[in-house]
Amino acid sequence: MGLILDLAVAALALVVIGSLATLAWTLAVSAVRATARGREQVVAMRRSAADAEARLSGTLARTDATIVEALARTTPSTDTDTAAGTPQP
Image (cartoon, rainbow, N blue to C red):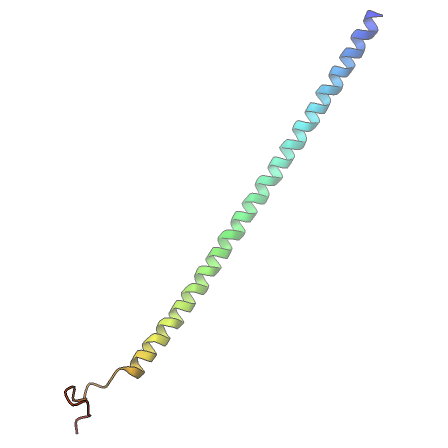
């Protein structure tokens, strides 16, 4: 009877070891997948930041051009009499 119990304990130990090995394998595979997904997300965020920077740069250039144009239209001409505020002949 003692041999049967010893064999049963050994079998249960093998089942536990197999279960732990399966769990370790599953966790390792999940960690690798999570790492890969994280790297993909970082790449996507970097692309998004680069796109936003490019859009911002374009918007700033257009805004700068608009401001320069508006200033050119609203700046008084240099041939104006500053004391009287009337143009010189």
